[in-house]
Structures are given as C-alpha cells and as structure tokens.
Length: 313
Image (cartoon, rainbow, N blue to C red; front, top):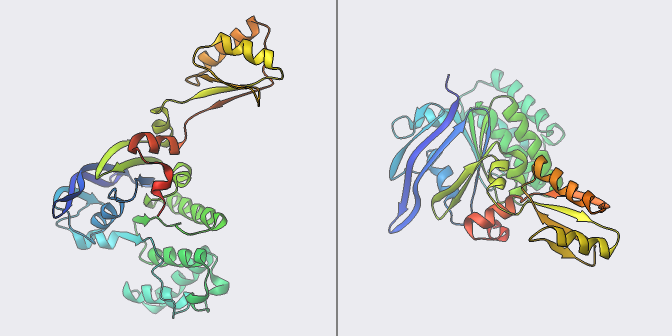
C-alpha cells in the first residue's frame, strides 16, 4: 500500500505552438487534499483532464491510484471520480433516478445499489428531495447530487474542478464539510479552485501553476512564509505615543487617524519579546497588539503577478 495517490513527473501538453503544461512535477499523498491554484489559462483544467484520462499528455509520466496513466488508463478510470466545473446531472431525472443511473452504469445490481443510493441521499441531505426532478434543485443541491453520483463507484481519488463555483457562502461551507468528511474516510482529493480562502481552509498541500509551470509548492503556511509582509500592528491612545513608538523602529508605517503603527516582523516569539521590551523601556504601552501575516491572496499576487480577481471566472 503506497502513501502516494498521484505521482507526476515532467508532464507536458501542447496545442499547436502553445505550451499549456510545461513539464510539471506533482506528488499527492493518499488521504489528503491537494489544491492546484492558478490564474485563468494557467493549465489547471488541462491538468485535471490529463490525470483523469480525458486527455492524453504529450510527454512525461504519471501514476494515479497506483496505475500508470499511459498503459493502465482503464484501471485509473475505475479508481477515480471526477466532478467538473458544472454539475453533470440529468435535470429531467429525479435525484434518486440520477443516482440509479450511476448504479446501472457501474454494473451494480439493483439489490446492492438500493442501500448505496439510500446512504448517499442521506449523507448529502437529499432524502427529502430524492423524488423531485433535479431541475427544481438549487445550485448547492445540484453540486451535492453531482458529487454523490461521483461516489457511487467508491473512488479512491476524486478530482474536483472548481466544485463550489457559483455557490452562495453557506452552500460553499457545506461542500467544504462534505469534502473534509471524504478525506477523513481515506479518499484523496485533487482540488482546483478560484477561491483562495477555499484552498487555505481545505488543502494540506498547494501548488501554484502559472503559464503552464509550477512556481511554488507547499502547505498554505509554508507558502505564506515565503512572502514578506508579516508585521506587528500596535494601536495607541495618543498621537504622542504613536510618534514616539514610530521613532523607535525602522521602516514602520503610521496611521494618524486610527493611531496605529505597523512594525515589520518575522512574527517569532523572540522578535516579539524584543519589540515589547523596547516599548517598555520607553514607558510605552499599546492599547491593542496583533500579528498579521500575508494571506494566500498576497502569495498568489507575488508568485503570478496577477491579482486575486484574475482567478475568478
């Protein structure tokens, strides 16, 4: 039993003269959430299409769920599930009928399929709507039904290509909880998303793809630490205290209106202690004290040169 669910080396894909994937390397641990970030056109969906056997690579190697992508495509397909950017449900069928369709496609008997369908309807809180046409479902319900259909085959690896696009915040958080439950059950999730908060909340590992190349990989915290900008925020009650504090530290930024001072820092306990000792030496005490670190928006901008809005489709 390997602890690697997806292993990719030198993966390439071109369309004519356009290089979409330029020799990317990935390693996804089993039972984790791996998130691939990147601006529009970076190659995220192409990566998913290649790894899910919907598209052939032009170079490189990949193993998914222990199977070689080039020579064991059928075994790969049997081990994975794919949920695309748009819910692939038949709106003329009811929720139960959509699930029954997937049971039939997987060659599962009616007797064996009945408890599977009932369990999935309950798990995704769709039991009450099971007999209603999918056309009457909300966006969040359709996404849940789509993912439930993916689970009929009990996949080891699930590719989620922007699964919460267009959902309201409540539905998005419901989907997050479902995704986390899947991982708790041992499923591996390969997630592409346009929401940096989503990657920050869910992902164990993140890779940033830009113009077909991986520009960074690591945990969310590791990526944030690569970006300068961590600072201590101090708020004083008097402008004289603010001015005195600003004179004690280099490269500070003062805000006279809010009486706040930003002091560059690595956020470590040693540097924080030194900062507070310096204030104490001069008889200063901040009314409020907090440490701020860069978020994934800052990371994304620094690595790709694109603002967060460039990610939104």
